[in-house]
Amino acid sequence: MNQRFDTILKSGTVVNQDGEGVRDIGLSNGRIAEIGGLGQASAAEVIDCKGLHILPGVIDTQVHFREPGQTHKETWKLVRAAPSSEA
Image (cartoon, rainbow, N blue to C red; front, top):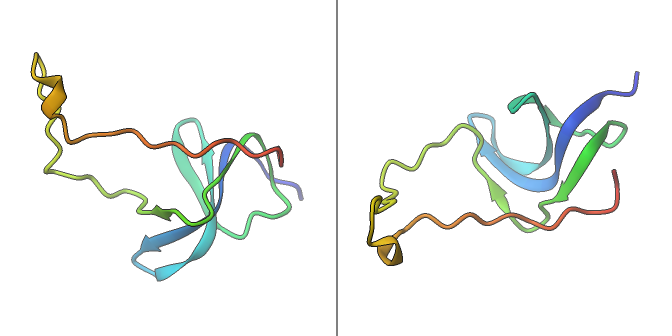
């Protein structure tokens, strides 16, 4: 059966309770639906995460948003990989 997700994070180094390994993450309705080999799955958006570490469920409690004002001192930077053409 071909699984369908909203987004697939492809080939990222996932670090979780199972250890560290290259895996795919399928996202549906803004939530992690599956972690593993999703080579047969499809999605509206596929993001190539090769060479990137993904820590699902980890919250960085030391992020400083500096709102309101002083945004030049923010420690939070959104980094998003470019979507691949594998959708």
